[in-house]
Image 1 (cartoon, rainbow, N blue to C red):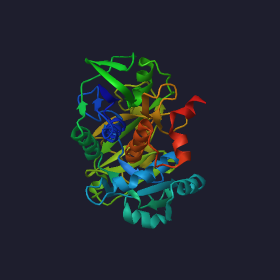
Image 2: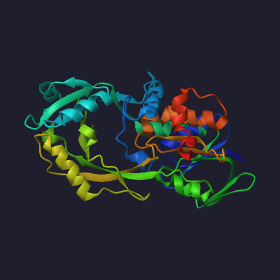
Image 3: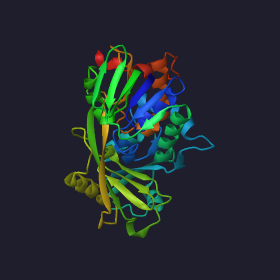
Length: 357
């Protein structure tokens, strides 16, 4: 008998599985050939403590120590630079406050990022508290914890049927019997819930497209911050000597193996080009990921209010990696009856009960 059967081998499932493996036998089922294939493998991989709604910021803050541990930490300094056009002063000012950034003279911003166009960029701000996350190592380390505690992490195990007698019986190539299910299936969480006879929570999968460009004008991008257009209209992030540019769209789509929308990507690249001096002459690759949002835009963590043996780890909405240490701890605390370390207001804002009112 399994204590916790985790459905989904992305960051939500693996982190929850690692925490729960301290409390019982854990098996993680991933439908794809590899872990982190969908949203987790297509993340912008940035930690910015002030990014997200209040409950997400609370999770960010609670995750910071784990991610930044002196020995074996997962963070590398990156920085985040906000870019506003000359007619965007009001929205720029709001973003500066929301993201807790420091206004930076455009001339100083151009010293750090020489391709910024002085004819179109009117306002810049900086946060040096943004970091790259080593997402692959974080995924693999959570998987190692599960295995070290006697659990299993299985790929190529797509769930095809779920029913409950005195316990959960899950078909995924073979049959698994479990006392609890943790639904960490990303864009497919509502489908898993319906399969299990549990009311869905209204998850909305939303596409985000990305393109990898050569380093603009051959610049060394190692010290460049991530660039963010006001109102998150686009972003550009250095990555292994290249530049990843995204239109930052959040278009609702059915759950599927996502691919970039060419028109949306072109529009986003145009918004980026407007703020820089170097035109986009070549796209080396493009792809897309699906971020999953609950109706109120924040994570859904903990036992279902109708059947507490069905546990949600859902609605990461692009915040999955930066919240994973604290989010998974909260899932485990709520699932095992331990007092959460997070404050009461944040816990209430994250529990699935809020969506049933």
